[in-house]
Amino acid sequence: MEVVITDHPELVVADAVAEAITGGATTLGLATGSSPLPTYRELIRRHREEGLSFANVTAVMLDEYVGLPHDHPESYTRFIHDNFTGLIDIGDVYLPDTMSDDPKKAARDYDELIARVGPVDVQILGIGSNGHIGFNEPSSSLTSRTRLKTLAERTRLDNARFFDSLDEVPRHAITQGLGTITEARRLVLAATGEGKAAAIAAAVEGPLSAACPASILQWHAHATVVVDRAAAALLRDVDYYLNAYEHKLAR
Image (cartoon, rainbow, N blue to C red):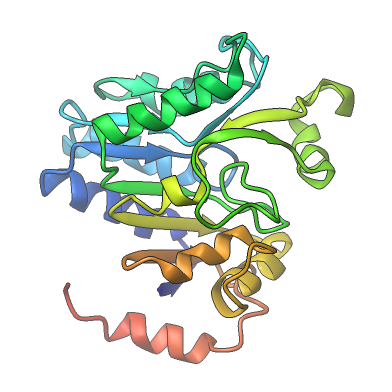
């Protein structure tokens, strides 16, 4: 695992995406939430000002709330369209059918779709304050596939700020599983702020454990965790991470 500590995580993540696309990558995994937003803004800027094209790229969504119409202001489908895919020249954007009468089957169907259009070349990830990635809450199997998940109350509380009340926050989502996520060729996780420091420390330096789903990145051959200094505050080996990145050799 590569750990990058920087004042501008969005530039490092955008570099990883841009390098992959210009190198011929055709499938991009998209996450939602506050952490990826600066990256999406930077990629939009590069598209508009530097000619970075996504025309040959297919995108797959990481997760979506169950039962929330896709045009709902807080649906992840609407979020990614309004903040990224609707502002660039990207090809197809795939998401699970979370309005299906059979969400378990919809999850299996989506997992099969990802396998057909993938493997994902770069999967962008955020991290929840309890260590979840996607909606893989603590106790999720490290080999789990795309499936229906019940959201932890802590996750619902964290997300309630986007809704008018906690009661409006859905209790279920379809999410790519940890096994599905780790089939991507590269994982890039971004986190900022002291509120993510404990989760980052557990993911990077704690044991590989279902108690912290994001720790699965330790098992991946090409995973990068990009954090600002506040999110890195509880890491023990900060000096090493800074030195390793400063003297990084090209892959």
